[in-house]
Image 1 (cartoon, rainbow, N blue to C red):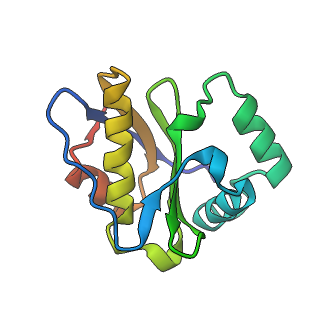
Image 2 (image 1 turned 90 degrees about the vertical axis):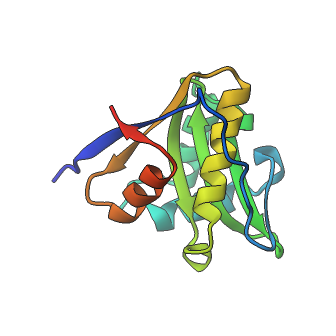
Length: 151
């Protein structure tokens, strides 16, 4: 059965809040992080085969014409593990957003999203979009709190 999705948009025409990272967590460069660890977090966040096997996922991601490694931001815990991540396309679209279970409820999702909004604003984007499953009430509450609107 196919999921129902909403398309949400964050306008970037007003001042943005700066991200506040949870203690011990910081954004990192995609190129400096083990891609398998990023993939593992995505597999947990999107169960049931929604994420392709590593080789296919990595190949598809890095060869896509909309791929820009500066728009793929992992957040690392002090021990070097991937606490969360956001992967975006150059078309002003957030493709994947995930927080590892051990790091949920601590403000990491909000920090990642605010960081992402700032990345797109710095690129001159007027807005950034994403799709969310209509049944994902936790994510929908976060996105609404961050000023995302349905389009």
